[in-house]
Image (cartoon, rainbow, N blue to C red; front, side, top):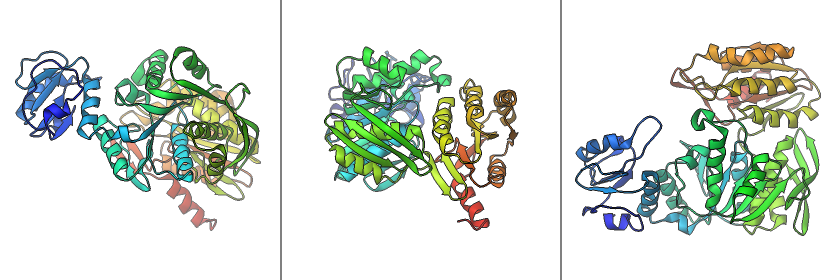
Length: 480
């Protein structure tokens, strides 16, 4: 692509060199002949320090935030904004041909985006999905590196969705991605806010910064669909003028969309979906009270997109569920569930919804991530101790942190609770021990890994799929 075409509508100073661009990147390690290198500032490094190396590697142009005195250099006010715009231009602005939907919040993003896509498909549309578990381009799946990809990868995916005939792109918007302006310049037909609880403070440092990152999405949306039950959702409604507002709630009849007569069971949740001029009974095959909130959010977003309420309700009933999100791995004499919950609030929501239908003991296995916000660890233990009849404390992804030190951070709250528990640092062994203790009527909840089929220990990624561990154990017990 010619540089003058690539830089269309990008404000810059300096003289743009002649030539063709083969790549746009902010990673100096990816620079190749013909690349445009955009200098951006990260948490630990500054791209401006690598500009000269990029030119030596064959970069045709360097985009900087201040003059560096280099040949082929242009300056912009903000490197990250310029990078997002340049990536959009390089791929021919594919997002302009898609109806974009973004979901943000601490918990529920993966479930809600998946449900919105399923509802749109039920309504006859082709749609793409970008999120934590994987990317979907209509019916094709591809692995996901980040919850919200970098602008180059994001626009490449949009381009493939357009070529596949997708009308919609439904995506998760993470707080880090919003803070890093990966979605800069995009317009979303609908933006959904789920909730805000403690997470990612290792990155954002303060809750105010965390909320500000989430809030920034809604400067780019036409319709904002907001959880009225969440305190930060109510703040969002007060602080963000402009977009058309739609609210949902499982508790407040003042919301535009409400869930009434919620009934929980081991096989799912039922509720009355009540909206403007309609009421529909929804049977949703994911257990837990918070599943009603997720289903309600997806339905509200779909109705905001023009999908009939009847179609949304039928699609939720026919839902395939979401891998690793309150997923039922086995339901018989006892029940085994798998969920990605890895914060105190997420565990609270999962267990509070499951506890009412546990006929026997509620057994909860969980671990705390390494090299992440350590303040979450006692909060996770407190949530487990509140609901569990027996707890199994183990590892999540220790990364390069001492796994025994992580356990020492999490265990005191369990010990003080008086609830019976065991500590087993090796997660595979911990899962096996939890399975072996199951009795008729018990419910075992495996928290933390969800869809993940790996563990990161001492910087090394190893295979660990709790779905397979459970499946093999059930086969051994002749229960499969």
